[in-house]
Length: 62
Image 1 (tube, rainbow, N blue to C red):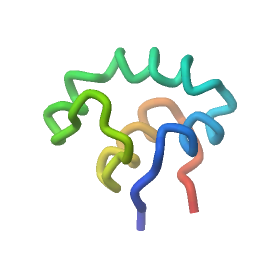
Image 2 (image 1 turned 30 degrees about the horizontal axis):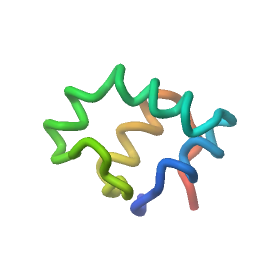
Image 3 (image 1 turned 30 degrees about the vertical axis):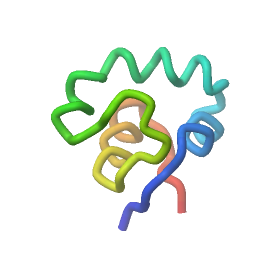
Image 4 (image 1 turned 90 degrees about the vertical axis):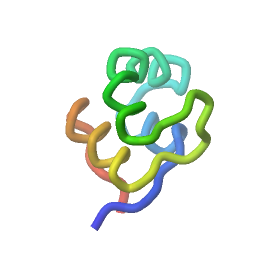
């Protein structure tokens, strides 16, 4: 089961900087907003974490 994750955790899992990760998020911002995401949100919900990881082929945090 997925858990909430921070930008830093997901950026580290993807092997990129948070700055680069934020640019990636801009590409899927519409879909994230539909899932309740708000710009500047510090913690992604489990559902958002799964979507982001699946979209960018990132290994999900334990």
